[in-house]
Image (cartoon, rainbow, N blue to C red; front, top):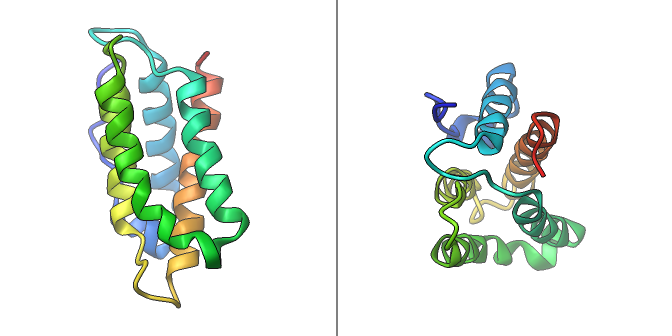
Length: 133
């Protein structure tokens, strides 16, 4: 399966989830499960990132600055990927979402993060639906 034409959009993070965002999550989740030139992204790789998002969400007011550390975490995963899975594409898309979170804006930071988390949850759900292991 080809990489989805669309990329994660800043608007979905800052203005709320739309049907377009859900459709993108569906296509991206499916893409991550299909073996082609690169191998699939494993559920355990997704779960590790998801665990970190949940940890931040559990006490957002004290842990929101950890959001910026998600990008180095993704970079490490890409650098470690010796199997040549779709970790790079996953990291690129998640980095776009992280960049869209307005951390300097107290009014919007938590809502932006929640929207990012919802999109990620949709990716995980569709990854599982399409046979991700």
